[in-house]
Length: 211
Ligand SMILES: Cc1cc2nc3c(=O)[nH]c(=O)nc-3n(C[C@H](O)[C@H](O)[C@H](O)COP(=O)(O)O)c2cc1C
Image 1: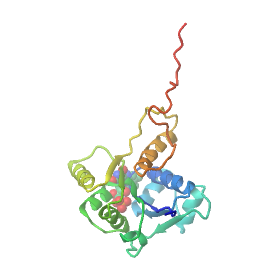
Image 2: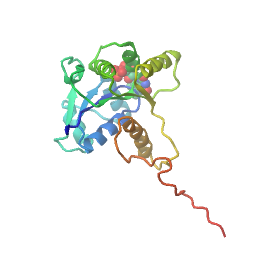
Image 3: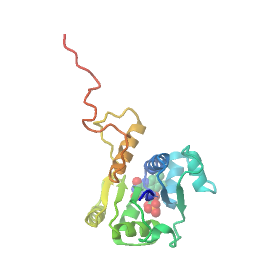
Image 4: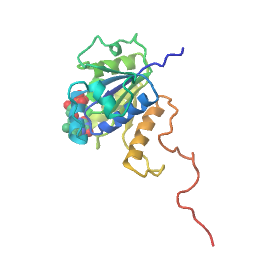
């Protein structure tokens, strides 16, 4: 089958909206179709953290902000629309990432609540046994959140943390963001080069020379 199955991306109100936005940008840059869900909490965090204020047409404004072509394969869903494609298991997707994932959304998904289309899409992804990656940013975790993480992991989800590695020798914040985003993409099998993998380039940065 030639058609690329869409990637479902939910951006929720945890600190680190930039992870979700970079993931969205990467997927659309490679022309991978994205079904996007953005919580009100996420919009508030984007305002607070990134001075990003969207006026009316979130989809068009996101595309402009991310410097993407106007015909990028993006579908933005309203969170109260339970008739949306991603609300049904019969609508095929390659899986879903919640990036970043707030503790509230973590708890809702782990409890099987469907108070928004984000929770419903995640529940559908799990029941259809498609990959679901939850990218948490918060730390430290309380026991309740750890239990929710275990519940989701046991249900087949990947629980990831927005903690960049340093072995690829990041030179900028954007390198650190790309590391985290790249590790999320790894869970879905994307062949990307957002960061240098371990042992990929054996050359040390500081060459030791002997006299
Ligand atoms: C600037 C800012 C940063 C926040 N960071 C986090 C966070 O890292 N983790 C979290 O669980 N909630 C965080 N919150 C609170 C959530 O946005 C809030 O609990 C919201 O109701 C989550 O709803 P949502 O999951 O539907 O987006 C933050 C809020 C603001 C304004």
